[in-house]
Image (cartoon, rainbow, N blue to C red):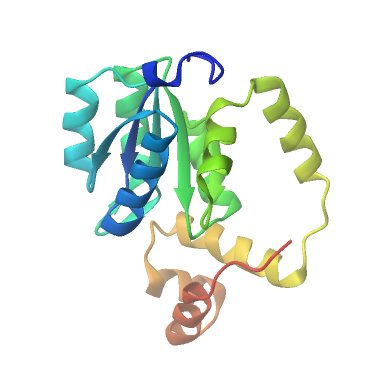
Length: 187
């Protein structure tokens, strides 16, 4: 990918998020920084945009209405092998972060993330990324965060099935739903 210090106008980023307000706001903010943007509100539109255009990077929302942004990563990686891919989500978990990286994402950010944080993740060099990952893995997690991570792991193992996850965890389905509606606990 071209370095951010080079002419930014040469960089094209695909923004994929079903939240139209967030998508529009992020596109406008990137355009103010002289970065060309393409916008998609669903997987099908994103696939069309990626096939029809040269893109240097993609910022993909994890959870969209009836779709997972994870399914888009292999398609973009195949179409644009050098493309930087950032997974952006309001529902962070170790399980989804690991899955996103395995599929080919370069970085994983939680919302709310501002434009500067997104660009830093998009343009950071791999050495810095590895050092950051090592530092983060040595931090001690709170009990609430560990519970959140475990729930996300079991949910992923059950392919997102709430009832099956509740049975596996030995908790009532409504209790699980309430826990899932909360934002993840801080480290």
